[in-house]
Length: 75
Image (cartoon, rainbow, N blue to C red; front, side, top):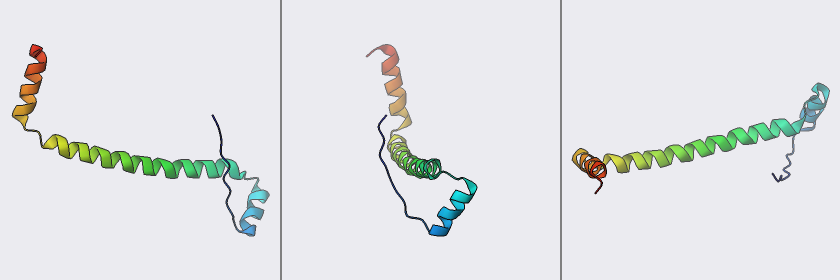
C-alpha cells in the first residue's frame, strides 16, 4: 500500500491542547477523512441503486415471468 501526505493548518491553541493531552493528529485526521469519504461513497451507491430501481420498475411483471420461463426452459 502506498501513502500520500496531507497537512492541515489548525489554531495554535488547538495544537497546544493536542500536545497537552497527547493526541496524535495522524490517526484523528485519517479517521475523519475515511468517514467523510465513506459518506460520499454511500451517497453515490444510493443514487445508483435508485436509478437501477427506477429502471427495474419499468419492466412489466409478465415480461419478468416470460424471461424466467425462457431461462428455465433453456431458450
